[in-house]
Image 1 (spheres, rainbow, N blue to C red):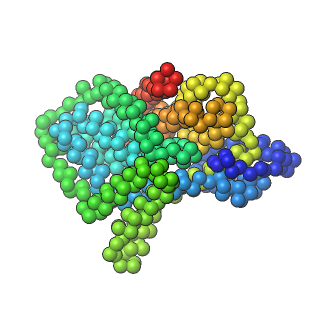
Image 2: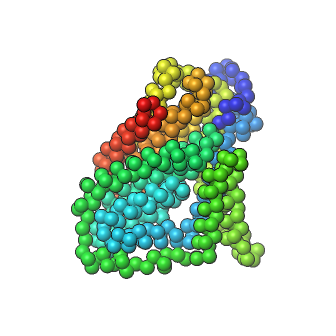
Image 3: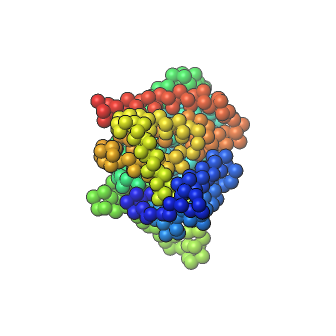
Amino acid sequence: MHGENIMETAQIIWGMDAKILATVIMILTYIALFTETLNRAVVALLGASIMIFAGVLTQSQAFMGIDFNTLALLIGMMSIVGITEKTGLFQYVAIRAAKAVHGNPRGIMIVLALVTAFFSAFLDNVTTVLLIVPVTFQITKKLEISPYPFLLAEIFASNLGGTATLIGDPPNILIGSALNLSFTDFLKELTPIVILCMLVLTIIFDFFFGRHLVTTNLRRQKIMALDEKQSITDHGLLTKSLSVLSLVIIGFILAEHFHIANGTIAMFGGAVLLFLYTLGNDHGERDRKVEQIFSLVDWTTIFFFAGLFVVVHGLEVTGVLSLLGHEFIELTGGSVEKASILILWASALVSGAIDNIPFVATMIPMLQSTEVLMGGREAMMPVWWALSLGACFGGNATLIGASANVIVAGMAAREGHPISFLGFMKWSVPITLVTIIISTAFLYIQYFL
């Protein structure tokens, strides 16, 4: 998605307009993605390959379309999180938080939601819920109460919290990399609204669920008897992991002043932590540990992104996205205010129904093509923040709206507490509407009042 480096492609391929051919390939790829008939990485790579075989792109053009900064950022952070996860830090924090409210179920629901939101801002949502949800089941079993409200709160918190930073959610990584936005940009623009929405979420859940969460003092004592220190499996590795993670975050914040890409910082952090993790081991053990950590990297997601970038680039070089961009300008009358509101609500609606990553990957070059006619990058920033908020918050709308939702539902079903699609929407639709309405007001006050 490098608009400034687009190479011209043939306008007629096999007697067909290149725009039509690229669009057909994209539609078929996206249908296969949304119906989940095949693994999403396989679908994206097939779509990318067909773009090249069909003559829409050359191989060099295809590689130009891949955003390697995004891939590097994902691989680096996945490596760091994979090693940090082995220390037991996240379970420690969850148990410590539960004990901080003296085993009160009403307080535990709130603090676990806040912990989930915080971790989701710095880790990917799926990793966060995979770490927090098992502790939630452990706690609710001891309190002998339903985990349902806890799980709902954690799902919503994971999607809200992930919106707060550059690295919290894949749409933000895509937007940040394409626009060369810094970690600080996301903190400054999106963290305030995430905090506000989290406050509203906790008030809603405390009102509808918290007041009814009661247990006995004896059961609360079981929570207080938990020893969070036993969760820490490797104190030395914990120190190394926290040190590297802290330095990487600081690096993200300082990167804009030294013109270093976020992907480089994440990859360097991952390499340093791998070095520290394997330091002092013999050759065989060192290689085993490195291979183990690399196996924790979600390569399906990495190759999915790579293939998707190529498919979208096919639309870009043939001029399809530029054409859509002009239609978008006609629809909004060139108004940044109308464009922002339209993108916010459309993103939320689409992201609730389908995976938000293909949607955002397609929207980025389309919106980039409209920047000149809508006043330039600076004038268009409200539209970009609207895309982030809509895509990330929209993930809360349905049980399939975000990967974290699906993961939690699967874990809940295995524990004998299934979350139904319609039962989830009873809470998810109102929560999503409230947060999008708040986002609309926030954007209007911040940029257009």
